[in-house]
Image 1 (cartoon, rainbow, N blue to C red):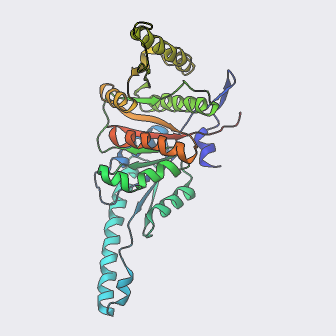
Image 2 (image 1 turned 90 degrees about the vertical axis):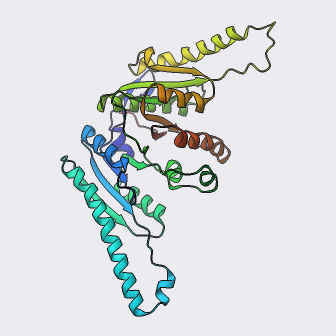
Image 3 (image 1 turned 90 degrees about the horizontal axis):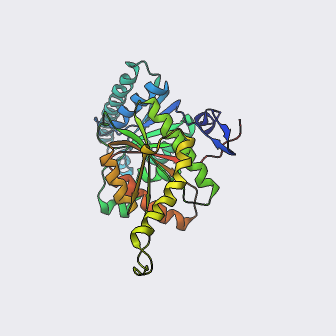
Length: 328
C-alpha cells in the first residue's frame, strides 16, 4: 500500500457529491539536522507519533568530506583523514542514537538511517521513496533574504517535490493555548481547489482533535477600489458587500466540517500581512497550506508567495498536496 493510500486511511465518505478525505499519519519520516542538537522537528515528531500511534524513521545526512584531493596525498595522511572521517561518523551516529532513544523511552517504534552521499537532496528523496511516509517532518533553516533569492534550498525542494504532506518546523515551542489553522480559498471555480480546501479542513480538524487544540480557518480578501467613483458607489458599502460574498462562500465549507463561524478569521488586506497578524493574534502552532500542480508560470508566482509564507510566518507550516481519492 502506498503512502497516499495509507494517509487517506480509506476514511473517505460521500457527501453532497464531494469525497471528504480524513488525513491520518501512521508513518513519519523525520529529517534530523546534524548540526542542531535543539532540533524542534524531533519534538514535533514525538508528539505526533504519540497522538497518532505512528512509527518513525529518523534520517540524518552527513556530507562526505573526502575530496578527490584526498586521494593524492601520502598514505599516512590518507590514514589520518580516514580516522578523522570515522570519528566524525561516530559523532553524528551518536547524535542520531540520542534522538532515537528519545522515541524509545516514549514507547514509540522508531528506526534511524545515517547518510553519507555527496548529493544529500537525492539521498533524502530516496529515503522518502523507500519508507513511503504519510508525513515528512523537517526544521526550517534560517536563511538570509539574499540566499533565499539566489539559492534553491533543501526546504523549497521538498515543498515542490515531496510526494506526501510536509511539516516544516520553526525553532520555537508550541503555544499551550494555541491552535491549528487552515488557509483556504473558496472563491474559485476549479474542482481541484475545492477538493483541496476540503482536504485542508479535514486535516486541520483531525489534527487539532488529536493534539487537543482548537481548529481555525483563515481567509483574506482585497477589494479593488482604485477605479471607483465615490459619488457613484459608496466604498464602505462595496467593501462590506465583497466581505459578505466571501462569507457566504465560507459558511457551507465550515458547516460541512463541523466548524462554527467563530472559528473563522476573515480579514481584509494583503495576504502575507494579514496572515502574519492573525498567526500572532491567534497563537497559531501549525498553519495548514495547500499546493496544486501548476505550470511553470503559475509555479513562479504561487511559489514566490508560498516562500514568503514559509519564511516570514512564526509558526510551523504543514504543506498538503492535492490528492485524488477513490470512493470507498
